[in-house]
Length: 219
Image (tube, rainbow, N blue to C red):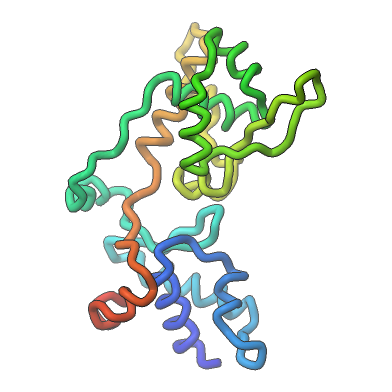
């Protein structure tokens, strides 16, 4: 397949999807007889990344694959297009998410032991509904409590490719302090501040293909 055509197909799919697409999903766009080599798809992605360097949006690789998104440095302005303000999370919510992210897999009782207070069912349900957290098993102790860990959606939302990219807690502990719990909260606050730069408008594939002509959207 012609390299320029392949790049256009990949670009169109990423624009239409409104979510990250993996290499495997991009390969699935093609019939067996026309499917390009994986290296060719990766080359197209690299080319698109380079073409976006001078633009207000970028092609970003996250845990779920590749997506177009507004550059973080511009998201403060672009976010004014949406009347709804980003949700504000309680300290209990942030601490619970932080403990799961940094200590996973972890049980609800272990979170409560560290925080010194009970964890609201509403917080756990909220994390599960956002698909930032999932049950990955059960601890082999009486009652077999659920073990919680973060998800790929968590990584995508926080603009991470893997948990290795979580900021080290040492960055959030002030000199002379040993308050790990406070550091966990500050770490997640920083992640939220940096999280999920504004994606390009999320339309269905049909709406995208029927909207502005490709030349107006293409890099």
